Amino acid sequence: MNHGKNHPVIIQGGMGAGVSNWRLAQAVSQLGQLGVVSGTAIDQILARRLQDGDPGGHMRRGLDQFPFRKMADRIYETYYVPGGKAETHPYKTLPKYSKDCPRELNELCIVANFVEVNLARQGHSNPVGINYLEKIQIPHLPSLYGAMLAGVAYVIMGAGIPLKIPGVLDRLVNHGAVSYQLQVTGAKVGDDTTIRFAPCDYMESSFAPLTRPNFFAVVASNTLAATLSKKANGRVDGFVVEGPTAGGHNAPPRGKLQINDGGEPIYGERDTVDLQEMRELGLPFWLAGGYGSAEKLRLALAAGGSGVQVGTAFAFCAESGLQDNYKQALLKKAISGDVRLFTDPLASPTGFPFKTVQLEGTLSEREIYLDRPRICDLGYLREAYRTATGMIDYRCAGEPVSVYVSKGGQEERTIGRKCLCNALVANIGQPQVRGGKYVEKGMVTAGDAISQIQDFLPPNSLSYSAADVIAKLLEAES
Image (tube, rainbow, N blue to C red; front, side, top):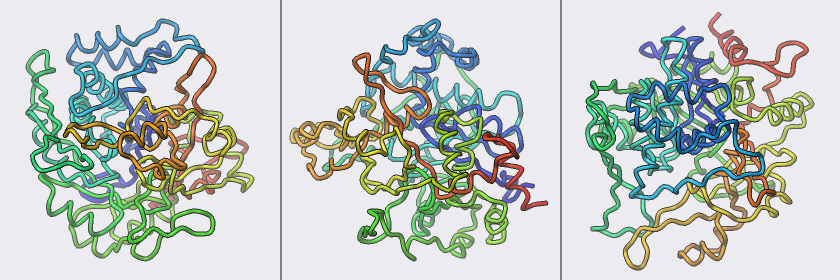
């Protein structure tokens, strides 16, 4: 069943925020494939699960496994609400990430990553992975440490060029101090843009060396794959080759951005990865973006790949964190042939195209988007920039226009930008409540393969499991 140096054939996509949760990753890994949790906003998600009363006691179970007891107890005491908060009450507002984060936020980040990986690993002995977005840079160091404390076996990272992550993993094995260069718009030579993290500042006792996880980079071009394999500051173990048919953030088209009549970016031959060049790098790779079928798995293996990464099929299965009402609505649309996707070149504050599912009652509806107050209170996608006084500040094209412009941002960059941070957390049933009345709306993302998700449904059913997905995909190997 396994190809490529005993790595799993199927990688379950790490879909944020919280769609690829511990339940989904556990279900996939139990079946011998690679279950992957999303590390995006996981600190926020843990805090909100606790404020919801920790249904089932799973967060407490994960916290009880954390090796630094005082830290775990602080997190629990700070956020746990017995019986859960009232529906009309807001969740606590966490500090936003900044270059010099407060200790409480780093602690929450370490613990949250540990808990998610630890829970996904329970009940079996197979590997579990975690997925991060390179562009959400500030939490990288405490996140990786927390995941490694939990024994994560794979770190998968896309949405950027993570040249320095392999070296960070190497140093964290022995709890060494690590650093990471923050991308700061307008930074000048001599500016201190380095994020630093020393595990010894957080350890409550001595701890044995950790296991260095495999590192896979998500790439959309041969150039990026070659750069990472040659210039990374440590070992790159493989690649996930992702095309623009995948859900979530897509890499922008190479060259000058062109828009079709429907308002979507146009991808061409330059955006197609040459698999012969990938093979010549000598590292295992998995194909992603529209590869969620037995036939596509067969093609990936025949092309020299080690397998496929599949996101959309798992996003709508029973174990994923996506709200059930969204799953049901979109499965019905897929069955009727009425599901519609839009690759929005403007939605994300990052400037990357973002693929959205057109679904009533979500931010994909123009009226709902226009009715939402422009608030940026989570801030994961904020841009760091240099102020006129040489300090580092942060701005987001999804925040109030006047605020963004006052920070030197261009007003035209705010047009059409949506608050993905709040929307994606709302997708998993944790919407922020404002003023006791306004409830944040979700915005669902999926890949082009959403039009085929009904293929995984058992007869006379409107629900399917991760096991159904894997069984369907592995028909290629029978």
